[in-house]
Image (cartoon, rainbow, N blue to C red; front, side):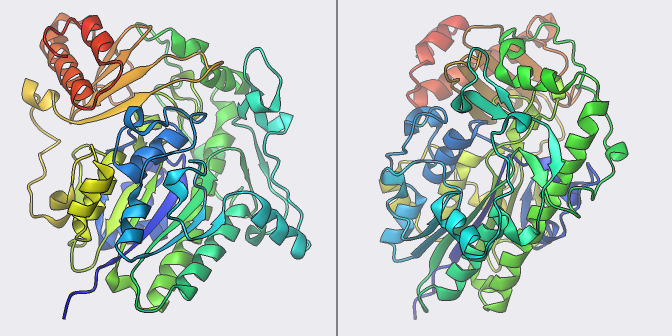
Length: 489
């Protein structure tokens, strides 16, 4: 008899930093359910967003292609009109379920979603009305948002670091509603049919308004000031100080005391989400499906939380790029493994396709640009060591990220290559950046002007140019000229 294909359950959060996972020991934040996933599967400890903002990052995750190849360059360039993982699995006979945040519009990318309660919209609001629950989430109100310079329009505002306890019960929250819909999808899935289900939460994306006891769960006094909070930004790109992300941070305060509460509430938000995702994992167990299901947990990007004088995301610092990535697959992946070499969210699609036996179908439809990391997860391929050596070849390896600003943001186009040790950033209209993330984990010292780093800088510029050429990046020639890369395009 043929072997039944494994199910896939994808759990997503929005704007969650890797260091919030309890098992890392980096912060007081507790995540017992996600820690369980890490124990029972593989934890990719340096997973990086291929684009550090919501829509482009999600497009790379679901297509296996970089943002410049998906048509979703920023949060305004929607909808996603390319085929996605969901389409591959639908065509392979899977039941497709999606609960929660999609953030990619209603183009082709969404057509494969058959069972979809939707995002924060009419379904949730109707549910609140039916149960006589108030909507106490003050999104985009003046107290919890920051205006884009030059406009006071609601559409021109971004969330601020301000916090407040939310009235009501946890069960009234949108993310609790999303999880309940995910549980219902698991319950009513067609018997005997494999499934690909997604449970996608909107937290811990600001605003930082959550109910008790989570709001007061962590003591602000336990939130130490990061070494890069007061970064003087010497030899750094000037646009970062012009951006809306710096404006929002500066408006909240340049004294860390104003940020302690924001940090502690962010941790409480993550613990709240961990409790909700634990419900999904427990229901999978109760239904007897855990042994037959690949569970993946990721976030789309991180959170700056005042580091380098910035808030939210949209930059190539580790706080913005580095995200949780946990994969559990009984019978396929040994339990308790850690991968510390850099991987990317763009690698998720080809990796899942390989683990489920749909590599060729996915390759034909998606034409993924990410790398199949299934051998790293299963232990069949050696993971390159990330904790020793700094040769030019090692420096020139790694993963890639990019960013395209939108009007009013005050940014510039960015391309980045990240190796085990070094990170190189090409800023289109500003100075480049080079960081030694081992010697300088808080990325305070830009090495582009250091003679001792010249060889590494040249190697990384060439590696970036090769990637841009190979992926048909429209900025490839311009970046190569700026880096003086002869014959790279």
